[in-house]
Image: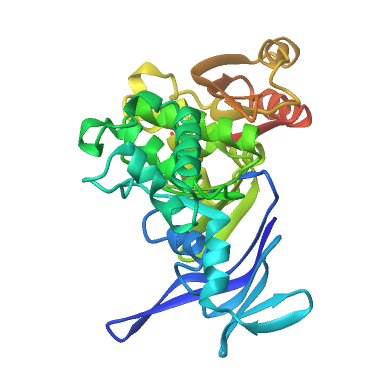
Length: 359
């Protein structure tokens, strides 16, 4: 388990202060896949690099099970462990970083070393025998499905294969936590899907805790259990992935959710309104979101019968989030004002979220 409390990291740039991480608190449970999403400059990479102290915060606390609690303040970094507190030493950091692996967007492989040597690199500093290193590397390459590339060089690999090498290298020290900083951003869609499937497999089979940093909501939807949305160094929204997708509260969160939905084309469609009858004063364009509680019910046909309204579906989309269906439609509902309002009120009573759409 990782618990972060009121963490802050500030940079002094050109006589101005940049609050990259600003009073952030969050909790990541053991074995969880925790996503952090935000646009460039939101502070998400700085936050994740504070977990293994590649970036050193100026204020706040970081607790990591099995290691202790680090306090950041005017006296620097203090480690509290077994009831004792002392300055965080370099040997403490080496111990911590062996338990936390990290993979990056651009792989960071040694170009002049083979796949075997890239994965073996961190093991050569652990006083292991040649046989032990070879057995460990062979096992890791088999785990990431790259055994046949053992003697290849990075230049001979695809982007997805390079990232698999980077993952194998990050697992060499048998970490409990794997930090993934934009790990799929440089990959094509097929390679992205393959790497996300591998990370999910490692999470389940090895019990790895994954912290996934990304600017792509589709990645969060595919792999994460929980997500925190960052903006200007702060966490503006946090929760289970399903709840965030079903009911985003903040404007930036809604923007991320809409970017991964087929409904994001509604704006373009409304620019060509001749394809939709919006001229009538007795019609209303709405977005209807169907969650676990309502996605399987025949509510559209029911309100059409019971409330004497005509429902024209303009756009529809169904996602699978955390193995549960989440449906949404853009619909034009036509009828008397009272009937339309009553129909929408009924939908809300049946756990359907109703949002007006500006034409």
